[in-house]
Length: 454
Ligand code: SAH
Ligand code: SF4
Ligand code: F3S
Image (cartoon, rainbow, N blue to C red; front, side, top):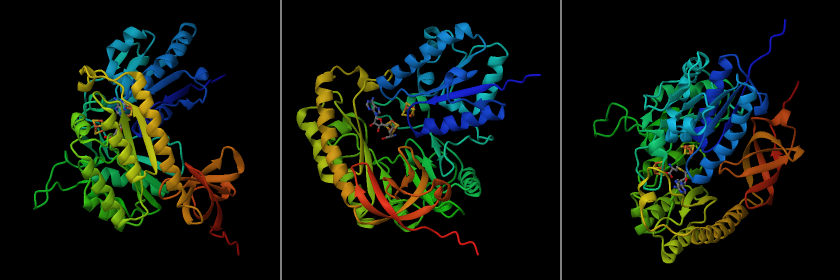
């Protein structure tokens, strides 16, 4: 008798939320008896977890899908799924465009994959994009790493930045309960994970939708309370979080990060633009002065903290002088990492309809100039690591040099040093930095816990 195992493949586009969702969906598929296949061409179920933040992200999906849709004509049993943000945005329209699809499911439905697939296997073509209360997950995610893990704390976003599709595709804010989050991290600690990144599109909004207030009228649980509540779980040596919104960022949170030893001194706080008029047109709800004050306060408490951010160039109506205000902010602050993009008009967002759009030439010229400056500053910031001793959490082997392992510093710089991954995986190692590049470091271990066999 031959029993051939059924295989699944997932390709993930987009942000950490999507990566976390993919890990949960992979967990569901494994629970259903499917086995992972790296090669989509050997899989019986193919899932694309998609991103629509910019037009080029969306277009990528269609080219991947086209290939598999063709395969489906020779292999009718192949199940094709589009999940994530393009699925939510396009819904039924995706079936008209790619009729070979079996299932189109928005991000809020990730935890319902099993029910949805059962309906597909019963012969239906399914579209699941209605907005739902996200159910707590009961299956174990299949996590890519054994050392670091993502934990969602809040889904969705209630902001209305005028350029952004996320609120349309991820829905309204839904905070998980503090106890569910703590239980997940506790379990990760038991399983040997060392680092947890708490995730939310606007993590500072955590708790706003939970019932209960303090005597002063403050919500019982905001994100800072949550950090205090989960910071001490056994086994977990590092906590990170993303993404922070300047509008809601508080000094109390900064103090908590300075005070709690496991919370890494790394902040991801997108500013988007350094110009107040543009920030207003974007509906961001802060000024560049406020953003600068936040960074100053962080550096007052934690002089070495690393700061990363996102910025958009070529937003509708952006003048050369306004763009230069963004350059000035980048020059003044000196980010440890800067993600940049040209503005991309997105369906269903206000700014896409404005008639003051800029040409692609202007946008890409500004992107180049911003990247040039951003990279110079990143390289400058990297220099401060030279000769220092940094704690590196070892995650993997260096794929380019098997005699080396790699991990990250608390400030999130990728670091390589020589060592055996079998021995070092998941260990926090003190490394003296001997070589500095803009985006990564190389060093020598100065102290490895000796596994003394007596
Ligand atoms: N919630 C986060 C970011 C989510 S999207 C925040 O508020 O900052 C990630 C990044 O994509 C954004 O920070 C922004 O820089 C970029 N982005 C979002 N919409 C975009 C668009 N229409 N065009 C170009 N970049 C965009
Ligand atoms: Fe988009 Fe703004 Fe929400 Fe971030 S805060 S996800 S940029 S709407
Ligand atoms: Fe993309 Fe959706 Fe994340 S649009 S950036 S995958 S929330």
